[in-house]
Length: 348
Image 1 (tube, rainbow, N blue to C red):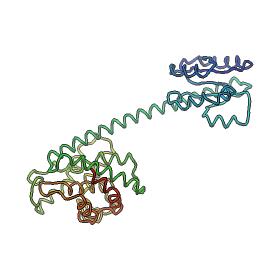
Image 2 (cartoon, one colour):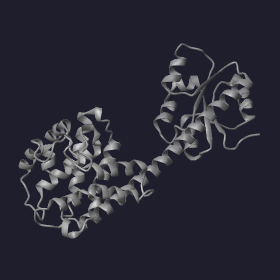
Image 3 (cartoon, helix red, strand yellow):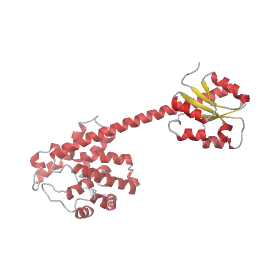
Image 4 (cartoon, rainbow, N blue to C red):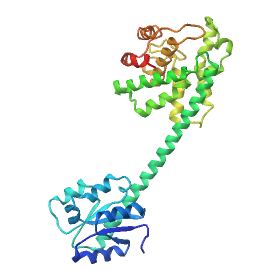
């Protein structure tokens, strides 16, 4: 029984075997006979049920395989396999099949059973590949939507922190930009970090939540204009833990990868490479790379902008302070990256 979704286009000019081939194909497929490439392109452009194209090898070769080239160069058409029908076994046959991505070759004399099996297998393979492509596009679309949702949620949470914090509303935007610049340079300069464009994007998107824990701090400490007491500073330090607790209560809001990176940054952005940071005194590579990058971005912005407890420091001075370890010790490799992007930082 014919499957109406398995339509075949046939372009074959060899009178001797033509009727035999048509008879074989008509047993399982709806066959449309054509005489030139333009008819083929017109048919596949308006009929989504075309399952395969059978074209005479001699015709294709005389036309410099223009049909195969057009099919493969057009994303709308490459879902359809091109099968050639050949009456010769010239030396260039195999090379041309491969070169022009021709899916199968049926050679005369025709064996009815063999032709049916080979055409069926080629069509099934392409249909499976097309299904996989559709699923991949769907998953990509879902992934893009999820990423957009992640960004929207994180930016909204970051805005909440800014409303309560002593920094200006531009702090998050600048930290994101510094993070992007530094992470991109680290990806280029140090492949051993294992950074990819996708990983950089996640780190940049998660960076606004580095101080989410500060929403749990009382105003009298968070907005104190003078020097903090030792006890008050210990309270301030707790925002790294409080932030992770807040994020833990938001399970299911975003993807597992985003949640992991957000927690890394929130928990460890005050750690220092020599173990002098908090809350855990982590050293070197014990500190997540995401947190190390955001930490530098955050310190640079804190130095170069006015706060209620300090004046802004000139950018060149802030740069030297970070490089010289006056704000804690950072990764030597990231310091090299910072040197490379100094101008970009200063232009933010």
